Length: 145
Image (cartoon, rainbow, N blue to C red; front, side):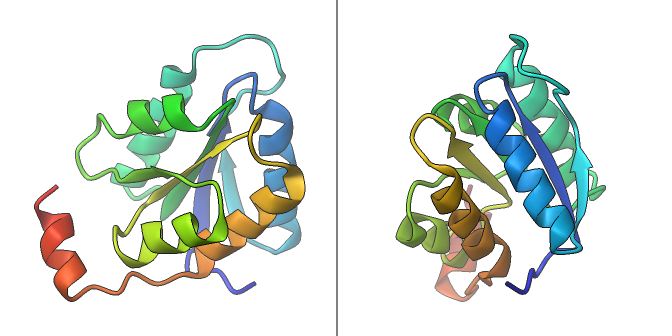
């Protein structure tokens, strides 16, 4: 996998903690810089707090893109999408992940740990990080968001 992005912000809630850790270790093994914004264990936390951290890092360009993991991915995506310039996509298969980048220029990948196993999650991370935005007519649409 060849990542288009050099620095990734990563976070989860308690439900997504174990999958977040697997993703973090995988990215580090691939020599990709990871900003792990927590949590540091699987104790109960509020997902909006962690979505906010990743969104702010992406907006401020402390990282190129972000990855969020919660039970379904939906709560994290909803929270992150409250921020201007954030396009967080809940992805559950290769097609949804590829299209989120190609057509929507998604800058945050949201995964559901209760719906996506580790092997599939790693595949989705690879697709997200290696797929280019097509621009063209899609850029016009993204600018309207």
